[in-house]
Length: 295
Length: 295
Image (cartoon, each protein chain N blue to C red):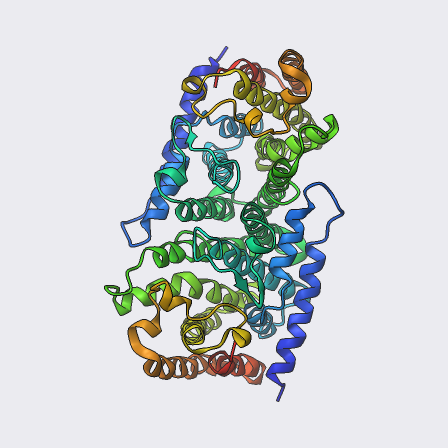
């Protein structure tokens, strides 16, 4: 049985190396924006989304190179969203992954541009033939990533988050908000494997079900860590959701029910993987890890 | 001889209709971000980049539908860049196209998200099969647009612009800055036609040469309008480059030399079109229009 912690760390190293390679440029008058893009994306994240891409690709005999490039594209989009969400006009977070957030380390203009640059580079990476020999596969990835990241996905979710009133929002609305804000990119990470591997419909269905439940479990755990974790462990300011009156699952359900719900969703997510053999074991493990993590 | 003003207006109408269609969504809790995306992109711009896409596509028998979708993608990227550049942390512009800029009409968070949404939607539009039946053509467009918009293009150019010291910057540096900041997207607009039409190398060369000279002519004219135009005509605040000590051609060359240079570049751009017949007449006319316009 492969060890989840070791495999996560190994994947993170691979992703860091590839991201660093993709973000290399000679010193120029504008290289500050690349410095900020590197700072934003090479800062020791858990790399759970890239891990899911790599594992889902592994189910369908996708080459490591293809999977790694798709994984980096997902991580770039994730990191861009953190950079923009941390801005003073948005969630106004000064700390991210235990370090000053990008606009604190550089400045706001550089942070806006670094986010824009990462988002754009994600699509450039996917469009390149190194990602997959078949251009139809590349356009599928690009279309799906854009949908997950755009106004009907992450961007719309963040807008909803900024506008939501935690005292009147309903449980279905919070669920929709979180599906858009974080679930959609999670789902893309899970579907990248079957897309790259031209998998049959049943495999897509399975990965979609898995992604749906895992994404929610992951988000509830994030909310719980904000409510209960301490900053040194979590690597970012905690207690901010309550202070900023964010519409979270924890706010609506309370800590106890939210904890139980996350655990249930993680177990449920694994059931969707029943059609896969032991190759899916790490996807099963990451589901449990997602709700047991301390950061 | 087709009339440039009438054709520009007709293209603008087509682009407005298609953009409006692409930006339609039902009322939802997050639809404010779509309202802002519509406000940013349906505000009566000149649509010169879409015009160039449509005309360059017309040289190679590209279907109007394909050309129009590519034109909308370019315009979305252009509009996103205006929204982000206008933010207080960047160029801090309150007026755009004669109306409050997006962050003044909505708020900063919504403006950041609307820009992100437009950028993302541009790639979604290009990735969709409606843009071209051949996915290899779509990945070419996406790769080229991402290069033009990213850290080595528009994003890098804006970074350079924010950091440049107008008293020490050299002419080659200003040229590089403007090539990245506005030239790269202009070049993409000119190359979209040959990409969509699978044109021979000679056509690419011609369009690249044309784009290079036209992009510079256009930018110098923008600088001149900022230095000399009046706000009512130009539709945005003028005199800001000087007030903000921007590194512009006008700052380095003075008004008289810059005017002559723009005119020269516009004439030069047309020479690259010698291999095309009268189908390129409107591209020839837009070059002259670009330097004679009052806004």
